[in-house]
Image (cartoon, rainbow, N blue to C red):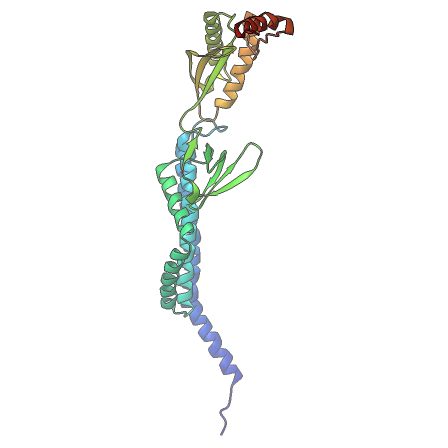
Length: 305
């Protein structure tokens, strides 16, 4: 005799099992998701608090500690978010009845295979970790890496993104970074050679340059960015100029603007003081055939011709 299938009983059992699952496993999954979101928000809030701790009163610029804090907090946020969601996925699979042991074993084997097959990626991550650990550069620094230079826009464990003056964004794998030239770490400098003609007075030129330095340091705009102004003296006796070397120490990334202002004032003040800024010139002596005749006759007498 065929068994009788009761659709109502089947629906009741399905609803009962679904309700039991929702009360137990479903509820735990919801708890996992809520806990993950709250934990990510808590980590982000802690990071913002760390950044706020190092912020100064000037919102237009960022000091060294502030930029370093922003870089580290950004990496921690991304890394923690990936790590938390991976754990939530495995816990959710376990709650829906999936056997995660083979997945964990397979993940371990796949990790070893990927490690051999993707050595460059592993190298990028390791190099990125060392860059952040050693604080070689931070977001907002102007650097030169891998024959490219620009402003650091972002740093991750795998790549560094820099944008040059033309607006081109260069994304450089951290494993390719062999050496770093950081133009804005802690302090920036401009070393400028000011050329004057040999007919101009060196002492007078040095006095004018020192006056320019005092003028810039007392200026309310440029003075805040200048840490030190020093005239080092005569650097070189060139073919057409006497070069006087000047060293200007500035706040990070301010050296180019200060250098442009200094060069403008040098041209303006030198013109006022009558000091000549030389340009390359050359003296040419012209000889005609008549000038060479006495020399040719002497040579002929010596040879008896």
